[in-house]
Image (cartoon, rainbow, N blue to C red):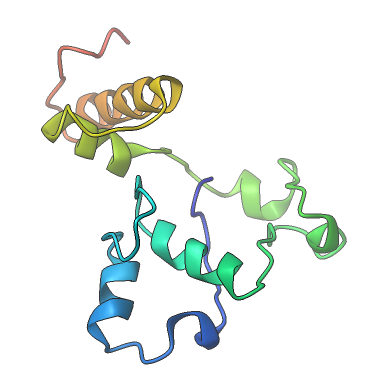
Length: 126
């Protein structure tokens, strides 16, 4: 899941200044569930208390949770997905994830390094 835009109920985080809330927002492990990316712990908490996750790009599609790639939201959005995860996997190669996601994230990070930071990695073939 890409965190393009996040709106979340306060009941999920409680006191925003608590150490647990800060850890959740920063993507730090707060339970035994593995954390791959920022906000994973926030989503775990939201789902645990019965919240539903929706795409917010189209009023007509919110109830069914489908994205509309032709909507104004998406057509004006630049997305470099999984760059944070890729950076984590690059610096911590023993991090555990599904092989497909790990490869995708590493390739995304490699493109970020090449086109944004002008510092290609050995993974970048583009």
